[in-house]
Amino acid sequence: MFPVTILLLSAFFSLRGNSAQSVDQPDAHVTLSEGASLELRCSYSYSAAPYLFWYVQYPGQSLQFLLKYITGDTVVKGTKGFEAEFRKSNSSFNLKKSPAHWSDSAKYFCALE
Image 1 (tube, one colour):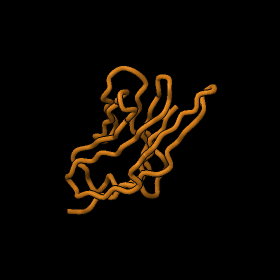
Image 2 (spheres, helix red, strand yellow):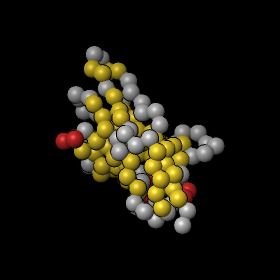
Image 3 (tube, helix red, strand yellow):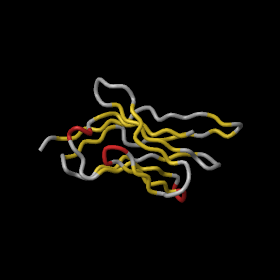
């Protein structure tokens, strides 16, 4: 089995009107075994309805879109078997994949608009 190394870097934030919004990714580095379940945490702070996104950057490649939450279903399906669950009650939008593969080794970014 190969280890899967996941890096979470540089959460994005922006301003809309006078309300500051922010994103926090508490896990800076995650290593797990191939075939294990992957969960990358993302929490946000924003008083209105958030638009939330996940992006991935594979080694030597540019940033790629994975998925987004605007409204509707709380579980959002993305590309390459990823999904994220929006939980308003604890202001989170965690990215999940099961099973994880060595090809998932990358930098992951949670963003809020």
